[in-house]
Length: 402
Image (cartoon, rainbow, N blue to C red; front, side):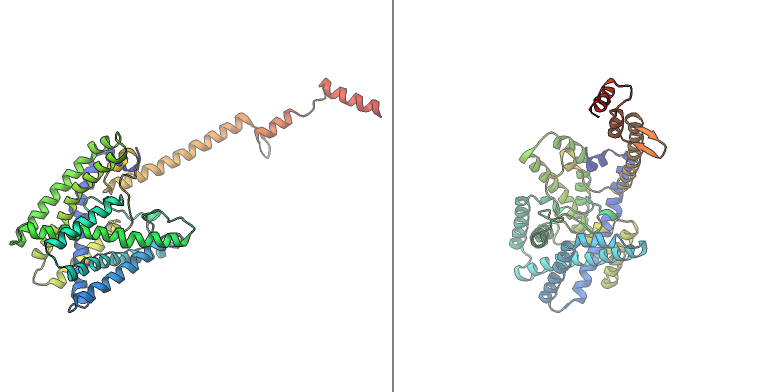
């Protein structure tokens, strides 16, 4: 099994810790950041003209995400070569800017649709159907997943890089990189927004629409229950995915994604509304500013601020075997597995050195100033020997000729 499925079988205490951290820390902080940033944009960015405000968010969001997508390899190569303090400063600045870009992108797409199509049953249903259909057709349905089913650690090795739809990150043809990034952000990214918008609107319409408090608690309970079910579903799903292939494997994983998504979207909606109801409801600006700052600060300190981001395109069932069933919400397990890989690399390096020394001693000859390879030894062994009768015969012939 690969790295993802391997994380399922780390010590049970690590799995339980990751589950609790995801449900009780990461998800509330991520939702708090998005809620605070979204409201502050509503409050300060042309509050009297919703259409202009949303269009500005749309342009800003698309612009930031496209630049981050197109220049991800350059950023990774340049920033990681800097001094430690400068790397830390530039990488965290990147996170702050890209977080704002993600929220603006979602707010722009969501808000413009609200302005021009309303928030009723028809637009909610159409938004959900178009989003789900498009993502399934593109084999990118899994991109609707979000915390608490996802934790993204701020890994320096992949801090600035992420996959695009057609995997052209290492292509030398710049027009392919540009088109791939444009498609990944404007099409796939926007389809994900459509799914979430449709789900939010439908939940607003069906879950205790007359009682905001009951509606918030209902979503929260449903969301956490569904998330726990998705966590428990990983082990049997891993066994199943290791045995089936083809279209049925994709179907099974899409169904499990849908189950997990029910948990994610309800956790987000429930926590978002609970913040509005209970966290300084008389002081909305301060309430949202608090969740904005606290969310980013706490997640940065915990080394998982990238959990806020919505970037990259991940294809359904692209991992082999049981790997595809593992939900990427490992935090403690990330550090355990990373340490194991480091130790395994050191052990492999030592073993390679020992094998090389043994091969040298077996196949070559140690000389005073170095080592002679096997080929050189063979050449020496094949050189003429004065006691060899063939060598003597050859020299006698030469003397006769003289």
